[in-house]
Length: 491
Ligand SMILES: [Zn+2]
Image (cartoon, rainbow, N blue to C red; front, side, top):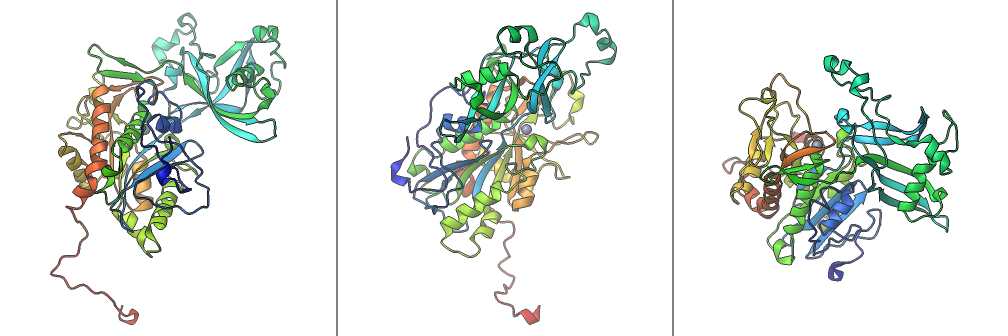
């Protein structure tokens, strides 16, 4: 329900006061759509960022916008906000390694209709074999009036599979290991040619130039409520696992689910923002703007129009600050200096079967909360000040966290933290919940760590402005003289 009191044709979108009470493990965490994730968390409705109408701040303003339906920024303005104050942000990524359908997805070989798919990111591709697969993504549909409409779609039933080669034909696997070729061995099977022809969908011979299989277009059209598959102009579809996330383990202490990296972080961030701003009173003492920024394309380096390496974050912070600052000349620059980013991305838990992969004194474990990631070579943006402030907000709520530093003889991963920190100049800490099986089609983490992440993020939103006010790093000592105005010719 839209809060009409504060809806003044904003360029961004008002976030609903209420949130959906549906269980997260069946909705948000298994969602392939970050907008759906936020809507499920109570952030709705939305309007177009491209709108040129003036953004007006109200005393209780909560907004979000999306770019490309895959990157999302949401924020709530504190009631004590003053021009030039900063953003207290949690950033995360929405994408995960997967197979994406190629522009010409249809292929036929050996009596099967197969799908041409491209590998996206660094997936553990061997885990995609023998899974019950489907597709999810977005489709452009032509309406009767000729307009093109953008729609999200997910086929729930398993419609394709990448079968393993039987062991009887693959004895080498014992000696050489499983080494599939990503071009020739990762093509999902959609149907048999003979069955497709029986159903009138078998047009085209092997090697013909049909763009997409008619069988796939029929399924998509039915899912979208269209009688004519020709209404589908084109699509961007990901191959996805159909198995839902579950709670597992003898004591029900685990989450078994695809894409925990990084939907676990995006869910906890969105939920923490909504729950830390339930009403006007919750923002009555807030000096800053609380926000989340969820980016696409992290798994392929973040350099895109909607990735963390693009202009989204700078655009959003600049535009919001200008709108709220009534012409203050340096409000935007001061905003970047005062802002703080929690870069949230899942961490590698200690694997009991491979303990040698971790530094002996930096071994993230389940049930011990968020991992603060530090790397002096700046693969992570954490430093003394950012880690201390983040630790402190948790400590005030009795929430502990743990430390990670990579082995010196091992390469170190990276996150959106250094990318945003270096482009915006804001203080940043890299954190993440510990997990196993990262980049497998089916990952694993601990339920406790989801809870601890969520509570630490809530503490960050609710306490950070106060804690930050107690620490000054670049302040000029009082005993030093301050030069207010130096004539140019004396420099
Ligand atoms: Zn990640």
